Image 1 (cartoon, rainbow, N blue to C red):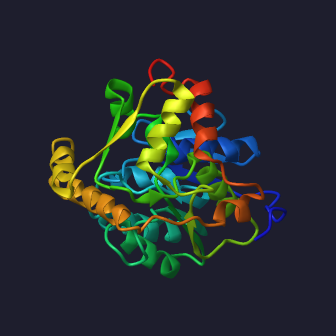
Image 2: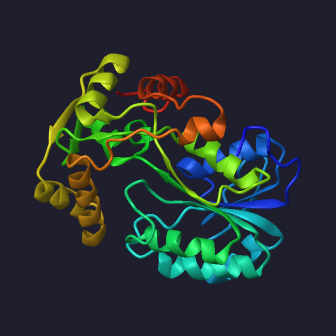
Image 3: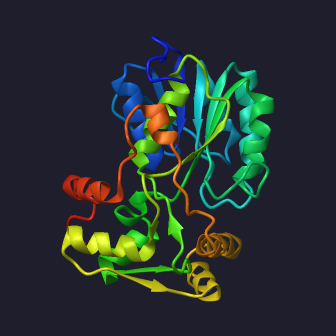
Length: 293
């Protein structure tokens, strides 16, 4: 796929999770380019330039209206569900039967095809749609500037807690994810592959804390926890099964599983991936966390 093969016109694109981190950015890119977008969320929250529609993964009665007349869909699985395939796969089969031709699935770099959770959806996607893509972004840079657990602890305590040790991650900008998502949804040819999305460099959490300190002027430290400590901390905030999965991901980072950089963002957008320092400066200018760190 090149940067010049976008289709001049497509039908309606359904964006699930349209007010979320990547969904909102994908909506904005699509509408800015003149595409017709149906913005799906549980509360049908208005989204500039798009048609808002109520959508709940666990309420199939909301699916028909969301799908009516659409031919492409950006799929953000339900957050926190340890078995999203149970609700996502029936929806995708219904979508295909309703005339949707292309699906772009948001997964994660830590989840391989056929793996746990959304990995099962990934494995099934090519059998449902002829045109598809799976986006597997690394950890979001916005985890440190938005409403994520890390961002909240940075603002209130100046601390990032992980069980990653000195492991490094190719953190990725959510704006870059949206740019790739928009290309995958609108290009004449679907990617028909899975894409691991990273930023331009792999950073440890100590590096992240140092950059945040330099950019904001407020001290931030990385406090390393054991796997058991991290699991216990998370279990107080979410279902135990999901807490264990997240702690396991930290342990995998510590072992080097996410210490990589790919060319997917520049290859699909025609520009370099955005670095972490630039994102912190940009999000700070936008007002994300500007009242604190």
